[in-house]
Image: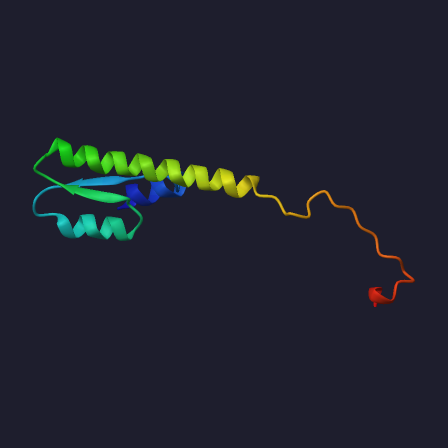
Length: 92
């Protein structure tokens, strides 16, 4: 669990997939609660593991796109310069 915490502290957007043995599901669930993306329980099924990894990459791509769009968002008033006259009654 310490390694998971260290990984996520260094790179919070990292998608960590915990691979566990048959009898270790509780630790895997705990790891997900601490920030792991998902867990995979042995025995190895390459199709299931490939699905989990593909979903992790897709989520990462969506998060990156969301961050990019959030950074590009501008106020509809951006670039407008206004001035209120000190004699205007609305300046209050």
